Image (cartoon, rainbow, N blue to C red):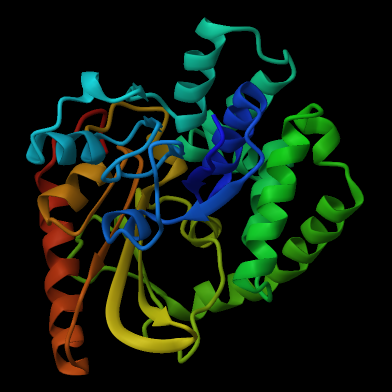
Amino acid sequence: MNGKIVTHNDFDGVVSAAICSVALGVRKIYFAGPTTITKSLIAISEDDIVCDLPYPLDCGLWFDHHEGNLQDLEYRKIDPSTIKGRYAPLKSCARVVFEYFSEKGKLPEFIEEAVNEADIIDSFGYNSIEEWRKESPGKIIDNTFRISGQSRYEKESYMREIAFLLTERPIEEVATTPKVKEKFERSIKQEEGMLKLIKESSTLLSADKDCEIILLDLTKYKRRPSLIKNLSYLLHPNASAVLQIVNLFDRGVKTNDLSFSMSLGINTNAIEHGKDIGEIMRILNIGDGHKGAGAGTVHCKSKQEMLRKKVAIKDKILRLWKGQVRKGGL
């Protein structure tokens, strides 16, 4: 295959791309978000591989694990079995890709450890705050993707570099390379500022009598703050979820469009909670996700519309959350 790999711009996407690269010998990797695919903002041909993203108009191989993307195929009347590649509702797309190519030939033994890390990171499968804070190789690398002060070109070049390193050596070695160590140290220094910002911007939803959802509203900022929303659990350890609301930016300019992202708290992983964040986003028809995390976009023509929709969507999310089956005392 002589095309390119188009993959999600996160840790899961990087590991997925690494497996495709080592299995197929493809050296061109491009990073994108779901909207880039749904709006056909990047040219994709029948020679290309798409990972951890919605199915495009056409491609050579497609790998994914998002239920919403499967539902989109049904809406488009596309039979998933006719698409080359694989869809499976696993913890990470990297796991889907790994299982597919493992069945077709031998992959380097060391690459499965990166897949194990992707399973945990993408599903937020931690059982305690202490476990989440532990500096595993995958966690170290994932943190380096989130530091502020990087241009898009710099970040994507770095992610591409990491993907190629993962084709050559174990993730433990990749995490100790000088560039990764330097960026990780920067991420640690930036965490103090992130926690300060979260403390200033986070509240518990006023209508949420059980104090389950942390609201992290960042719409007041003229520049989008770079932070890790799950740090909110260090300040609100008993919360069950965090909801982040930010404005989208177009080439550095703040727009009236809103991004909602939500994830379950660590304390929900040890119980049968019946919550599904991805389903909430799909019901609202604004986005997609997994049971443990989801995100969506709401377009607004004016600031007034933005303010109205922010309140309306926030209230709908809370109602849907409360309406989902609750077990185990959550």
